[in-house]
Length: 451
Image 1 (cartoon, rainbow, N blue to C red):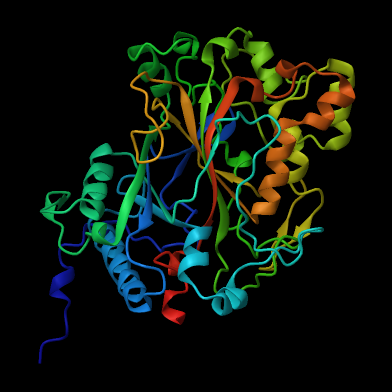
Image 2: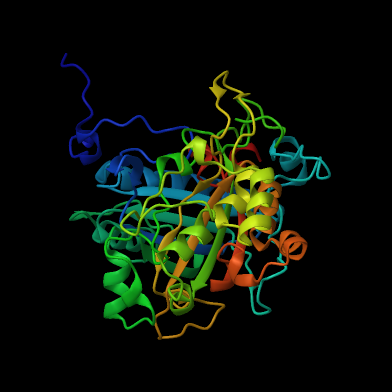
């Protein structure tokens, strides 16, 4: 008898490059590093898309939720059989709003499994909380309540377009020229917004100037982001699973092996950028407002080091404010996003002082604010902005970090004008939501199999 062979897996292009999928969703297989004058920088995927949805079937329908879990699992697996799990293929992250857990999962199940905060003053709270308004938010800010958020990224725009169509649009769809057979889940949900953008070296200036966005002509050639400086430094992004609920002590009650181990608190927002006002500052002024007023890198350096020996904690931050009357964006928050001392993780690894454990996956956009939305008016006038995605061990931790970005206390204490406190003055947040990004094993309707 001939040995068993899986003939259905012959056309499996994803297997050309063998990848062991990480436990988390936020670790990105295949992302490489390049050297920026001695500074290691992650070459993140070029094209990004976010699709938010609300579920269409009624709460309490356990059978339908179980079916939805099975179908989404099958759909994502089919996409990943065609496209490699890498920037050259496609990378998909699926996050869930609090409405999903409140409306779809019984309290007895969430009480047992949902991550709880252990941070002082918030003990016992869910580690995902409703998003808040901060002191410098505009009145028109919208606090969103989507059930599910899909974040897709790839070096190839066509991969995103084909995958979005296959998942959410009825009818015959193709994935890399192959018929999509079991990917459609659009009958289970209603798309509430589509948000697109990019994070490529030189692309912000190209896109901004072609669209006539005011101030875009001042974006440095080769910059990855509209504000000029690189954000994807290896030393400025949490490595491995440091952003997960369980990895570092003091944030949540999640333990290694728990249902949501490998998950994280995800923040999603859209932020408009006033490029004209930002680029009124020269290189030195922008450098000091992004990093700190003691940085001296020359104009051609778009990726100043963010290694541990450059980290600013509270004492030096306050000295900078007193002596220079400027607090840079990075130094506003590093005391909350970097380890203050060597720490042993839940996995027994010693993590060095100064290591960052907050992860950003933000990307540029020219939308105003989105490509498509069912709840917000959309302007045809292009606008420089960023779709911000941040991962943190808990939403309570993120809220503390974001509050420091407004820096009201430090501004009053040191009598600082708005333009000398990071770069918040030049940003306008239009939408915001906190979500749960579960581990990869539970990315399809988490907890549904336990009902």
